[in-house]
Structure formats: structure tokens, C-alpha cells
Image (cartoon, rainbow, N blue to C red; front, side, top):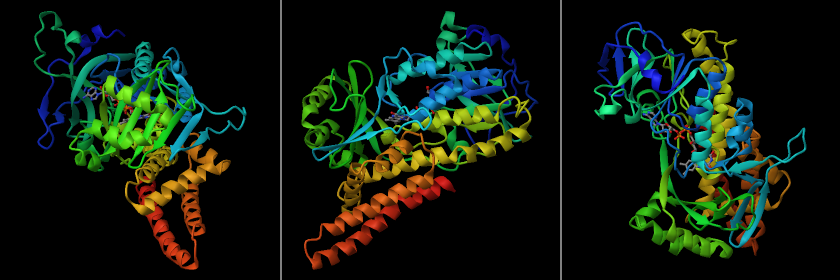
Length: 501
Ligand SMILES: Cc1cc2nc3c(=O)[nH]c(=O)nc-3n(C[C@H](O)[C@H](O)[C@H](O)COP(=O)(O)OP(=O)(O)OC[C@H]3O[C@@H](n4cnc5c(N)ncnc54)[C@H](O)[C@@H]3O)c2cc1C
């Protein structure tokens, strides 16, 4: 279906009244006529992949995206092997082609002049090592949107969704109102703004409007929290110490990421904690030059300075949002609107794409012949929240826990743990392959993660005790080791609790 002929199908005189409680919701007094099976709000990674996935199952889908031009963002540029696997399962692997992406064999962690290589493990059956890929986010998302658009039963509209429509009698969401963008309004020729938003109806609305979701507040209990921002810029024609690897540089204050995103460009993301930014009166360039630069490996310092001077410095907040279940009939949250973690480990797209895999399976026509069968849909959504947990929790907990260790700042116990983590990686073998497999979305067990996290803590305590130069120092270090153990518990256990429960 083409984009332009869509408007002829829309409801004529809607009986919409504002919700007394919420500006983002309108009520519809009559029994709606459903024009679509599913409306997807947002055509980012999650929304576009879902529109395609449900479209290939024969569902009639409308995807409304605020801006269909190629996104230009500093997010979602490193795809873990787990994300690639999800794309394969969705039949979307080709979206990674022709985007000048750079294959990734794993990571390198650089700390105080030393570096350790963290290679992805091997596939158990093929014996080939898993691979990730880094790329320009916009090129990948454009391919996803193109794939969705290519299906006859998927309609892609450029427009901003303003409100969700609720049927007050049944207490369910039955559609959305949206304002088409100028180029797609019926009155575009005379350039008059559209008088009122357009209503569209479907038994299921999927909100995938990203990290700053407009609709989350109205339905989900948990809200995102963040303590830092990633500042991003580009280094041109830079050869990284270990090409085809993501680079994590542990600076005194917080981590720095670097990965090549095409033949010529290397992305730099520097985590700047909010308290530090305030200390520098928001003069982030000064902070990057005075504090971060000395911790960057010497071979990269000139390119770092050049990139800082010549490319645009942009920022995005780093936030954590544990999943909360939404019991609203007819409404599903997906992607960053549902769940976020610190982007240090590049896990967001992997979680979002696996959620699409689960939803596609659970809402498949042989499981749910009609999406108007609210009882069956709700039951399948309950299963969805449990099914997604093991992979998403492992990725989320690892991202948050690693970030706390890598942004130790002045905390002595966290600094011991940061050192312990680096030393643990240096042991090699499963001390590398399992953690990096969890990070890559290849393994999906929070218990396996817990095992390795506390192995790091115990290893840190052990190394700390071994460094004692006298019996008295040993006694002092024993007390400190208990404090380190306590810190490990304080980092990990609350995360486990919020993610598992
Ligand atoms: C700094 C940073 C770096 C990151 N790096 C990585 C990484 O390397 N690897 C990784 O896997 N993840 C990374 N992530 C996370 C990743 O970007 C997200 O998990 C992923 O983009 C989520 O996809 P989404 O579709 O939910 O949201 P988005 O990609 O944000 O898409 C939401 C879409 O909804 C549209 N929209 C919003 N409101 C409306 C509306 N009212 N009407 C219509 N459309 C609307 C937007 O225009 C947008 O296209 C990073 C995140 C940050 C903050």
C-alpha cells in the first residue's frame, strides 16, 4: 500500500473527547471500526523491525514515524552478535548489508597503559567465532524502514502521534491520533496546517517511540533514571590499536568507547557523569581535554584532539529503565520505551530485536488467529514478559554493573573492583569468553552473570590481600576486603532484584 493513498481510509467524524486525567489520551465513545490489525508508534529499530515482522505474518500494520528521513544520531552504532542473530530470525539480516559496516571480533579494554583483548566466543555447532558489526545507525534504520515499507500489508506514514485513543467503556486502547507531516497531508499543496490530528484504529497499538517516550508516563509505573551523558564525536581515518574491535578505555573518572563505524569514521563516546559536568560548568570540551585526554592511549591522542576540534560534539543521556509490565488491554510498549540500560555495552538494539522475535512468535496467526481476541493477546503478553527476561536481564544487569565499576571516580572500593575486573579479564579462558558472551547477547543467563560478577569480587579481594606487605597490613586489607565484598553486593543485588522480580 502506498503512503499517499492511506488518508482515504481514515475515520470521518470521530467522537473523541479528552481524557479528564491525561493529555496524552483521548476517549472514543463508540465501538471503533478497526482499519488495521496493529498500529506501531515510531519507526526506529524496534518499531520498524516489528512492523516488518508482523507484516510478514500477514497482519495489516500501520507504522507512524515522526521523521522518515535517514536518522543522524550517535546511538545504536554497535550491534552485538545476539542482535545479528535476532535479525537473522526475523529475516532482516540483509539490512546490515550495503551500509559500509565494520565487522567486530570483540572488544579491547585499555587501562593504565595496558590492554586486554576480549574476543567473542565460538559458535558451539559451527565452531566459527561470533561476530558483531558497527555502522552508521541511520543507514541501518533506513534499511529496516525500507524492508517494512516493501510489504504490501504494511503502511508507513510520516507523522507525529499525539494521543492514544482509549475506549472508556472497555478500558482498552483502540488506536491513536496523529498529525501527518506536511509533505503527506492532504492539504500539502496549499501549505495549510492540518486542523486536527487524524484518528486511526486497531485492536493493538505498539508504542516504540524511544527513550523519551511521550506515552510511557501514562501507563508504566517505573520511569528512567540517569546519572551521565555520552558525548560523541568522530575521528577521521583513525587506525585503532586493535582494528575490528570495540575499544573501551577506562579513564580515571568514567569510560570512553571507540569503534569504527565505516571505512573512514570512528565513533568516540565519552561518558560524562552529571556531577563532573556541573563541576566544569558544562564546559565539556575543557573536561575532555584536561581530564580524559591523558588517559587515552598515546597513539590515539592526536586523532582524539583533531576529532574534538573538527567534528560536531553531540550528547545523549544514558539512562536505566527496568521493565515494568503494562496491564492495559490493546497496548504494548517496546524498545527503549519499555526498557533501557547504560549504552556502555551496546546492548539496546539486541534487547529490542529479541523482543520483536518473541512478540512475532507469541502473536503468530496460529497462536492468535485474531488480534481482537483480547483475552488470548493478554495471556500471550504475560508470556512475553517472562520469555524476554533471561536475555534482557543479563544484558541490563551487566551494563549497569560494569558501568558502576568503570565509573569508580573516587570510591576506593569501586576502584578495587574496577582493577579486579581488568585483572580477571587478563586470566583469559572462560573469564573472558563467558562475560563477553553475555555482553554480546549470545548467552542469556543472569545466574551465569552472577557467578562471574562475584568471581571478579572474590578475585579482587584475593589480589588485595596478596598485596599485603606485613601481617598488620594483611589485617587492614582483610577489613577493606569485606568492604569490597559489601560494595560488590550493593552493586549487583539491587540490579538483580529489579530485573528478576
Ligand atoms: C548514547 C547511546 C549510544 C547507544 N549505543 C548503542 C549501541 O552501540 N548498540 C546498541 O545496541 N544500542 C545502543 N544504544 C541503545 C539503542 O540506541 C536503543 O536501544 C535503540 O535505538 C532503541 O530503539 P527504539 O526503536 O526503541 O527507539 P529509537 O531508535 O529511539 O526510535 C524511536 C522512534 O520513534 C519516533 N518517534 C518518537 N516519538 C514519536 C511520535 N510521537 N510519533 C511518531 N514517531 C515518534 C522517533 O522519531 C524514532 O524514530 C545507545 C543508546 C544511547 C543513548
